[in-house]
View 1: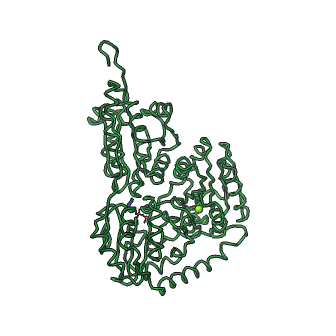
View 2: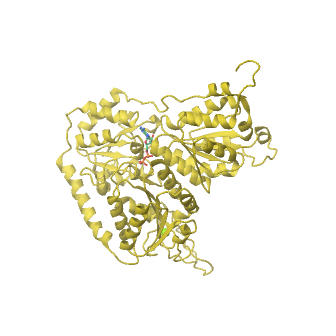
View 3: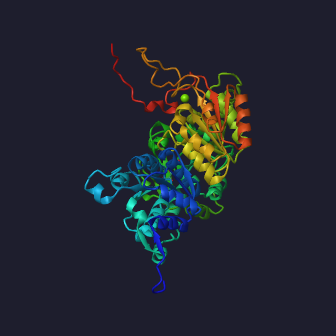
Length: 569
Ligand code: ADP
Ligand code: MG
């Protein structure tokens, strides 16, 4: 500035906003309050879209799924202590699922917090966040905001993506500095998630092994969906002729109806394969840790694993051919390495899987076509299966127990990143947050298929959905309770621990906020209501009455429940 003239000033508020905008952040999910209310207002005034929720966990889940869908970190903005803790659940979940997300929380004054003198919402948030996310940073000086935001972004999206916590004490926002110096302090992150090329020797080792396979199998995980390497993955499968099994959020990278999909022959495929290529899928509980009877005889399996995180290798069983790198580069390298000389798997193997798949599909078919009341999970899902077949661009959000397990198998997906669900933890409560995030980020219609219990964890966000007029259709599988609606208190005092008010009308909830409610009892009615709701593009909620006796305990993971062997007299 010219000497003598008053300097132009900027402050913490504006530096945070400018740093986010400089790095292409267009949307913030959050809940306003002290000390970030004005930050939200100013973001909105500066053109950032601010989506305000009713509870921070749902805002955090929206940010997390935004990260999964876009490969840019989703931003969640919360108040201190309780708001921070609510958002932290979503941040931990995002980290577990490898979704890039940044939780930005306001916090109380360091001097008081560190001396534990009892400040408003006093909490050492940085220390608490640290073990639950990939990285955590605090900015104390306005001049460091640019670096703080840059570090948060890079930490969230580079390598294995995950959640990052950014702590911004209240005092930071009103700190002032010279505008020019402020602008110069901002950092535009260059190449935030650089390609990570696999070593040629790792590719050769994997290809040499693959050539010996008699019963090869590819397992696609949500890392493969996240990587957006859809064309290369399809080429790898089609050129090699290797059958594949998709994990639930990898469904649709290739259509579930693809001739090489062994999704409906999953058990046989896992048990009888000899060489398994894991692409962005971890050998965690969802894959029985790569061992036990799911995977056939001990020693019958050799694993090739593609993952960006080197330490994922050998986490549960020996990985004979680790390929460390980003999925796009790794799959490209496999394709280049084979180059026309694929040893197509023996027909015996592909035919075995096909026969098993067709038999399983045929066995299921009649259960999906019953048109009677009350509905069971199969008949209701039969109707929704047709909806997605007719609307392959719609995004399916899915949570619950039976509602989740059965929908995963019954509803075919046709396009990548269209199925968003409970993920690695099998967590309940992602529903409305994911629905809002998906609708905002993609502009596509969203169909959220929710167990009645699962819905309850985020149900207040139907107001948010109505407020932003989002094209979200919620279907509640209402079976009066958790797993089933039939539990009773043996003493006769209270309702059973797993049941809700019988015959609740969830459809009336959305009407309170100007959305459209439907109440249906047969699959035909359900199909008609969903079509009408999705055609209208209006926020809608369909209460679908399911037989209270239809579900099974914990869906298909009942074996994880500990059993008591003591019978009390
Ligand atoms: P699923 O539950 O579908 O099996 P997981 O969450 O277990 O999927 O596995 C996803 C894996 O994908 C993680 O190990 C993660 O490190 C990896 N991953 C995520 N993004 C990429 C990427 N771009 N390139 C390579 N690996 C990735
Ligand atoms: Mg239920």
